[in-house]
Amino acid sequence: MKVTIWNEYRHEVEDAAIAQIYPQGIHNAIKEGLSGEGFDIRTATLDEPEHGLTEEVLAQTDVLVWWGHKNHRDVQDDVVERAYQRVLDGMGLIVLHSAHCSKIFNKLLGTPTCQLRWREADEKERLWVVDPAHPIAEGIGSYIELPMEETYGEHFNIPAPDQLVFISWFEGGEVFRSGVTYHRGRGKIFYFRPGHETYPTYHNEEILKVIANGIRWSAPTQSATPVYGNAKALEQVKPKT
Image (cartoon, rainbow, N blue to C red; front, top):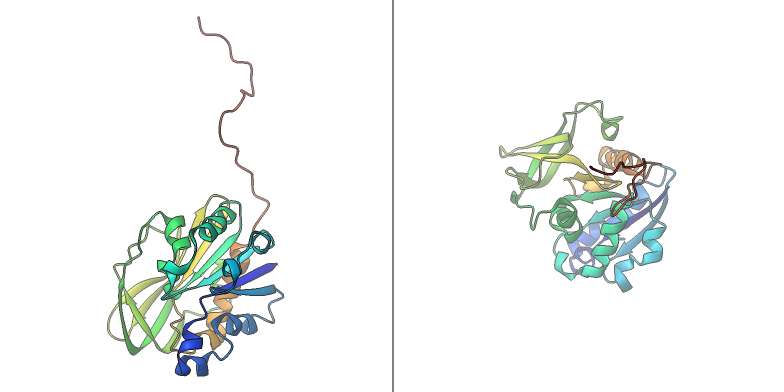
């Protein structure tokens, strides 16, 4: 399975404290964490030509993993359109943390923004598995506990998800739909909330396990190919009298 991990890769360059947590960038931390999963992984970042997501790269990508935070507007619309069409054609998409505001996620969900409540207060997060039979939750216990994370809280302004896999509870009292799935065209999408850049979340084995499960779940399958537009009748149509 061919996986492309995309990351803005600006926080880690501009902030020394974040660089200590992710010295090679969030994208490479996830890549290293998934190294034993049998995926063929490449990375791409915002400041590469075409953001590293050329037509050739996307054509060779089964699942695209997307981390973004502060530079959503810098992503070129033609690259977004390219990724959007690939999802409709069957490419899987894993959307991480603040990429809920990414152009690609908003375009696929049909929402101009995905608002929510948030704060940075080093709060404990407990991600409860609410669909234990879902493949994305395979190998995870009743919950995942993170000692410190950025807090997100409802209302999360997204369309009702096809499936709800995780709900988070935070030390300050908020709850949040932290693991949701969607189908768009022939493609499958998984949004997974944890992963603020100032915390070592992507070094957590359970978080990496969920991402690996999400990649396998969202991978393309030999699904039926829809046909659109003007179509000839399959049977002879009798003329109306």
